[in-house]
Length: 312
Ligand code: FAQ
Image (tube, rainbow, N blue to C red):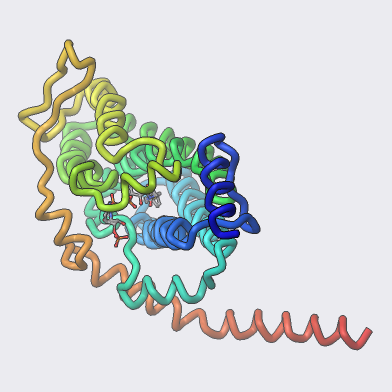
């Protein structure tokens, strides 16, 4: 039976037929998805914090309304992804607790501070921009609920990316101080954004299996290269520069070649030693504790609804 199950599963993967929650799947496939989707969900909700830092200081009411809506969208992405993870049999509370206990990761990028208003435009443009490059590929992930969640998320992320670019365009066309503020934000975010795609393929323990299972359709390095190729012309169009002296267009390759990423910094950040790791997790722990009464109220309401239904 188990051999037959394995063979059916492999045949579906081979034929690009999505795996659905009630289908048989190898436990390692299930656990790998819980890991990736869970970390992805955590990234969405931790990612709300750096942007929230500027909500009360947005330069105009219009910018504030846009930022508020964007942050709300990220919460929604977290919800879709926690729901997708739950279809694999894990509990949302359990994986969220693992985030709070530092047993599950979230994207390294959100451990960098947002020091100026330009950082908010740069997050929309570059961070959401990198997220889309990665996530468009995930719309074809072999696990149905993950792939379907990604379709809606990608639509919203691409709107976020455009609003980010519109915000940085305003700075690029502004005063010398605004231009300098934008350049400084690009200088600080460029390298950390490149690490969003994960370690180089040769150092990525999960990639080979995830690609064989068609969870990942492209490798970390392939997606990183795609992002660089897409983004360099956008930086140039703004009249800004990229903080990489080794960046060069390679006519033969048809790609930009870029300098060495500081992987030591990346591993320090994902180990918990980044600039804002402590602050981000403290904020999430406080949110969890402060929100206890809401959860209790919601559970009491749902218990009451059930008992009314049973009585009727
Ligand atoms: N940060 O073997 P691999 C967003 C970990 S959403 C932290 O290559 P994999 C939207 C990795 O988990 C951004 N950890 O792993 C937004 C693994 O650790 P583990 C999030 C990282 O899974 C915008 C270990 O290193 N997007 O930004 C990172 O095959 C604005 C070995 O790595 C997603 O999560 C990292 N950068 O490939 C929200 C997309 N990179 O589990 C708010 C879905 C690697 O063994 C505001 N995820 N690690 O302890 C993926 O596509 C993949 O999980 C990768 C990593 C590509 C991130």
